[in-house]
Length: 331
Image 1: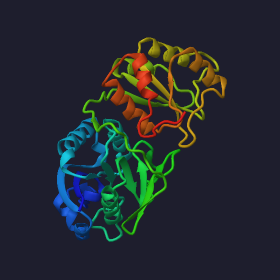
Image 2: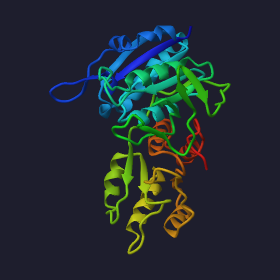
Image 3: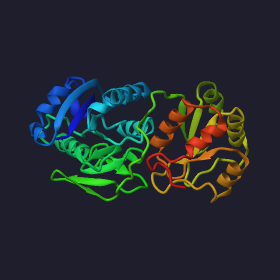
Image 4: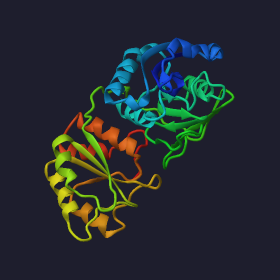
């Protein structure tokens, strides 16, 4: 029987109603009481790491999760992490970069309704995550929700209330879990190396979502406070330059300072392609900015945090950014 460690971090799945709204307060031991049949599946131990609404999750919590995984890695066959849905995709992406080449499964799940709710999706998500964590073919970081198994680097929350809350962006779902069985769509290769644990992140990464007519003066503030910048542009990607080149000058100044800049798109699917239009092609040719192609914003942000904690050298940053990790990038 497989040994599974259930790491709880809060979220809707662990919430109870209060006069101020749902608040995480269910302990890790109490969570297990809702799934007594789990003893038929595996030998499970719980570890209450923290109990937070995931809106409050930040890079320090990702580091704490990785340290917990590293500490207990040799003692268990797989890991299930319960988490709030609002930042779950960010956590899944972060863990994909911070725990690489894991031969054991690390599965993140949660729910849209609290465990105690009559119509909750919590029990099924939790049981399915445990089933997947027990599968002999499973390894690496994945998000499981509504029966679907999604790569940690490809997950995005697309619905605020529906049980079908997460989608795999520009990459197939890995598997589906039903009736305590895992049916794979894609067989993932197991690395001969690893696991590799990273416990440092540079949180000074900012996402700038363009709106028509945006004033580039914001760059002067960003330059003082951030090491990496992700620009979510329009369509396949470009920088405004119709009546003046102030925005292009701001980008040029940022890059001249040796800071990392990644261009992506606001559009959820099919990624960027800055070679299509003049507004993208000219600036990409002239400056050494990086293009994200089909990466999710969640993956871009957390990958930059991981890279910038290791090096600030522009050439090294670029090399690491374009090195694929768990199918995060397809050029």
